[in-house]
Image (cartoon, rainbow, N blue to C red; front, side):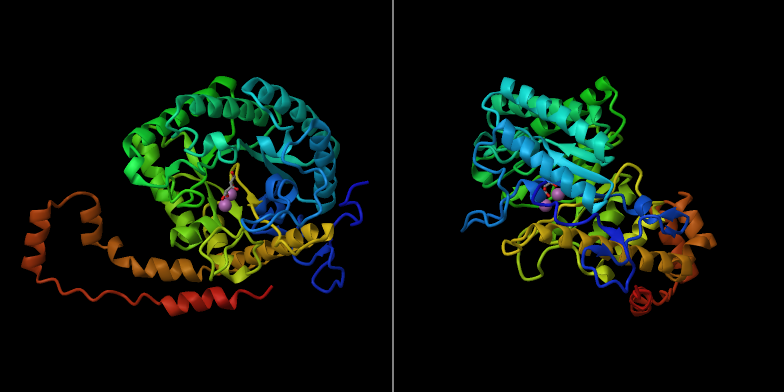
Length: 438
Ligand code: XLS
Ligand code: NI
Ligand code: NI
């Protein structure tokens, strides 16, 4: 018995159910465009916000019932937490979870203790995974909470901090590998700066490049077949984070020779903070060939920080799901609910209600996006816009048959007077809106 045992296993009951502890739209086996909803969405629950966060904010302490939490976590508290977490996961019925090393283990005071404590909890996690069938979407090391990381981890001014971070990532990557994790994530929460006046930006980027190269080398050394994913975010907690968005990550990977080795884990609220639409991040990552996985949540339009709320607006997510379907779906990635309850959502039941609502939102967006894609209407409209490029001039430009000078000569000689085609943006938006009927 845990605080999550009061809710019966959550099942699909359809749109007419009056049971709030049931999925209305997410029917894991329902086939959409040739594969099941579960295969399209590959949903995961995150350990940190769900079980390792007491509901504290910068002005106040914890509000949520999380009896296994304290400033220093002992082994028995970590075990209590694990028991509750897997009780919740098995009742919620989603296939995956994600975790940071320190979310799950007993607090460690030294690198040696860290190795031992993580290994201890890894064995318990393995037991729970095989007992419940819940799988690991990704693991990650927390390289930002401890005071030693105040100046960054890989980008710290102190190489001993770099070495501590290497210890954590080595152990967590190996644990993720042994647990059958499908990806390994690095969110560089403090890999950035608060002031350029005291920061050697070039040196820090080189340190970060070195660190990531070591991670990739180790991945191959141990035979981990999952993807290494960097999670972009523009700022918070630092003033500026080097991985500010998908394009910045790509430039970084190129610079350090890692473009074929590392992809991105994109988060909705981080895109909002970066001042771009979430679908922009997906489109950019696809264009650069680095799309990996998604942290699904949302911000508040009137707050400028990472509020990490559960998604509840399906229409807003349709362009994202259209991109995902066009890309053929995830390979090793999935939708990780990197979302947390509000501080007044006080009951254990609220964690179920939040995930159920989020899952139904994703399922609604998937169904609408599948209809949009199946109708072919957006593809037709986009294709029509670029039709000129299929003509003789377009093909010859792209084939490199002109120089700048010969093309200019051609334009002058032919007296070109082009009329661009209508963008049809309002129609495109109506096509999305009219398919949102689930
Ligand atoms: C914080 C990030 C974090 C990562 C994992 O803003 O979203 O939760 O996903 O370290
Ligand atoms: Ni995240
Ligand atoms: Ni975030």
